[in-house]
Amino acid sequence: MFDGGARAALPVFIGARPGAAWIHRGVARVAFDFTIHDGKVSGIVFRADPEVVASVARRRRGEPTDRPKA
Image (cartoon, rainbow, N blue to C red):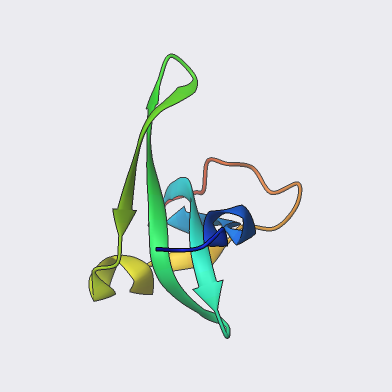
């Protein structure tokens, strides 16, 4: 479906949690919502719900993965 698009996923915050997203022309289209267990990714849910992708914010290099709650 993505034809390799997952390799182009960028680090983001989904709300306050770290994740990744496929961003096309500057707009998040799909969020990769990770389930973490014992410090390792144990599951990935692909989310395209407009409310979820609207909450995506780019995470910059070196930025901590724990985003402060607003």
